Length: 107
Image 1: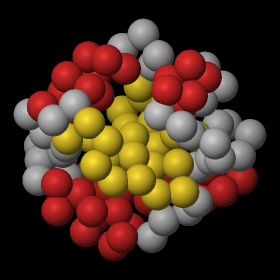
Image 2: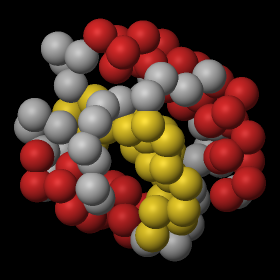
Image 3: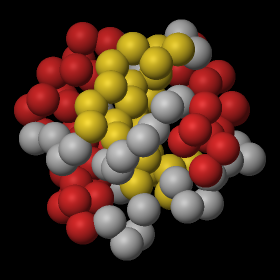
Image 4: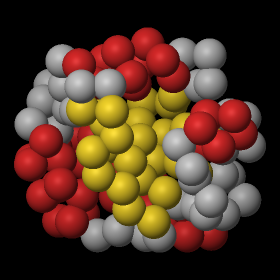
């Protein structure tokens, strides 16, 4: 199951944590249809990469400042962070193999 990130914990749970393991963040909203379609894929990725990477979701309605900080203009947007920096970005629903391949590149 994917972690739930918050605006208050984002710096520690994503930016700092990405200095030891890559972190995949799914920027989503509960009312977003495509985000709902992406959710089970994110949970599968979280299971597949357990112990190797951190996979979680950030509700943009609850963390608008964080979404703005990383230029999230549409959702779902998925960003992989490594060493405190965004390294990969995807917009729209992504297939599991696309995200797995991107995470593997960042391990």
